[in-house]
Image (cartoon, rainbow, N blue to C red; front, top):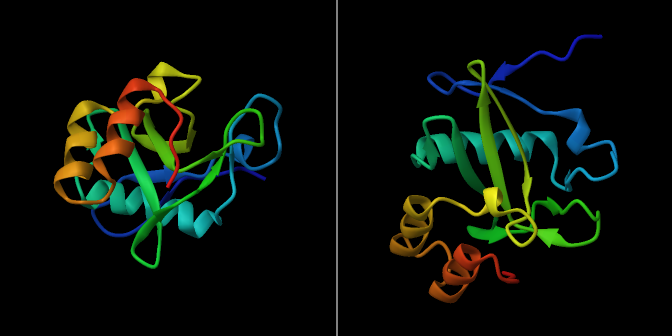
Length: 136
């Protein structure tokens, strides 16, 4: 059965839930939220302009507060930032591990938005930018 990208809602680019980040594949971070919540995180990132040309970052919210959305490649360390990547006009994402992968550190523009919009505390934003351990 083919896995096809879906459009979340009108105006939002097509998005594909990648099964490698849901089936316990070794050395792949894993979502712990539902596919619907993953899609909502992408749609929210799109609407808040957290997507830059071909990469972007998102968060998962519970009761209007950021919450963990997955586990890192070790399948143990909780993570709360999603990274989204545009591949041939179809986006996909994965739980980002800013501590182990520098490419998973959210762009400074996005971190500034999170700080300015009071989405994440200053300390957390600074730790994210430095690749340091942080939690919600």
